Image (tube, rainbow over all chains, first blue to last red; front, side):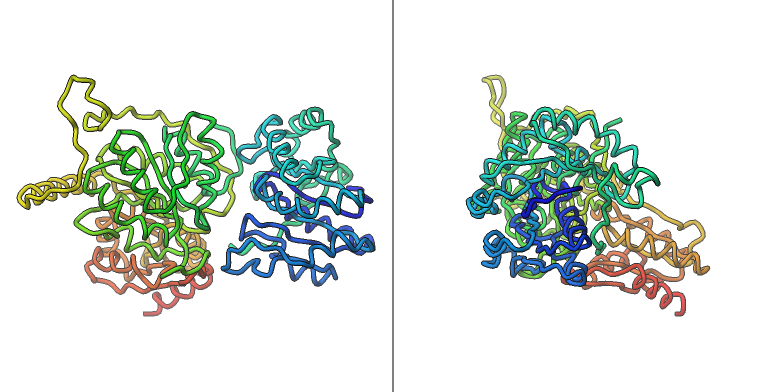
Length: 219
Length: 351
C-alpha cells in the first residue's frame, strides 16, 4: 500500500480488523525509514487493542499513544492529552486506530478540525464482507456514511480486509473482490489495498495484497 | 446451507435469537456481553422487533417477565453482576412457569470483579440463584457456532416445558470471533393457550402470577413443577464424550475450559495416558448418569473450571465419591493453559 499522506486514519465496522491493519501499516512505514507514531482511539472495546502489540511496537521504535486505562479492568472511555500532539506536531507520520462503527468514530470528531486544516490525511474504511451487518456493499456503504457523519471527516479510500479468521483461504478473499469493487463504484472511492495473512499469499502475487501479520493471540 | 460469516460469540447469540423468532430484547449494557445489546439495537428496528435499553437490569428482567406472559419469545442478556441483579425477576418467571431466555456471558467475581472471562456463576445458574425451589435449563456453549445453535435450542426447550432457560457462556466465547453458520431453524409454533394476550370475549381470563397465599396450593404447584423438572432430567441431558471408550481417567469440563481440556487430552494420549473428556452441554440437567457410568470405568476424575471449584461438587455427587476427583482451576478472569491441565492429568495418573 503506497501512501504518502502524513496522517493515516483507520476506521470501519466493529471487528473489521482496523487494529491489525493499523499496526501492520505503522510497522511497514517504520521499515521504510519513515518516522511514525501510532494512536489507539478506541473508546468502544476494552479488548483487542493496539496496546496488545505494545511490545512489538516498542521494539520497532514506534511510540504508542493509548488511553491510560487501556487493557485494564477500568472500562473508561477517556483519551489522553498526548493525542493532540499527534495532529498538531507535523514532523512525524501518524497512524490513528479508531474504534468501530459510528460510536467509535465519535472520538475522532474532536481532532477533525486540525486534521482538515492540515489536509494531509488518508481515512481508510476497513471492510470485512464476512462480518455480519456488512455482508453486502449496500450495508457497508450505510456504515461508512454513519462513520463519516460521526467523525466529521470523509473517507478517502477502502481497504478490503475480508477474512474468516484462522479459517480464511485465498479463495475466500478473492470471492469478495466483486463486492469491494461495487462498494468502490457506489462511494467513488479507490480500493487502497486487499489484505491477506502473509502466509496465504501465493509466490509471485505479492503485489496484489497487503500482507498481514496477526496480533499475538492470548487464547 | 447458510453462508459463513465471521462473528463474535455475542453477535452469534443475537442473530440466532432473531432467527429463532425472538422479536423482543430488553437489557442493560455490561462488558463483556454488550455486543448482544448493540446488535439487537441495530437489527430489531429493521425487522419490526423491540429493542429497549432498560433503566436497570431489574427493569429489564421484569420486561422479559411481561412479554413472556404475553406468549412471545423474549430474551435478556447480561454478565455476572448484572445477572445477580436479575435474580428476583428470574425467580418470578420460574414461579409463573414462563418460557424466556437469559444469557449470562460470565466475568470474574465476586462483586464488581473484573471484565475477563470466568465460570464462577455455575452455582448461581444451576442451583437456583434466586429464591425458592426452581431450576433453569442451563446450556453451556463451547464455540461461537454453539453460541448460535444452543440459543435456538434454549428457546425451544423453554417453550416446550414452560421453563426459563439460561445460556451460560463466558467472556472469551462472547468476544472471540470464529466462522459461523447461523441456523435457519423451523420456528416451532408452540401453542400457548396460557398466554395473557386478550380473551377476545371467547374464553376465561388467563392469569400469570407467582403469588399463592394458600400454602396448600403453593405446595401443589411446587410438586407439579418438579414433576416437569423430572421429565427434563430424563429427556434433555446433552453432553459430548471425547476419547472415553477406553479411558482410564476422565476430565470433566464445560464451555471454554472444555476446549482447553480437549487439547490437554490429545497431548496426554500422545504420551500414552488413556484419558478422555466428558463435556456437559446441559449444566442443568447435569449429565449425572454419564458421570456415574464413567465412575465404574475410570480410576479418577479432574474437574477443569474457571472458578474456585463449583461443578466439581456435581462430579463428586454423580460419581458417588467412588473415585478421586481433582480440581484444575483458575479464577478471577485468568485462564488455564492446556499444559496446566496436562500437569493435573499427570498428577492423577501418578496417584
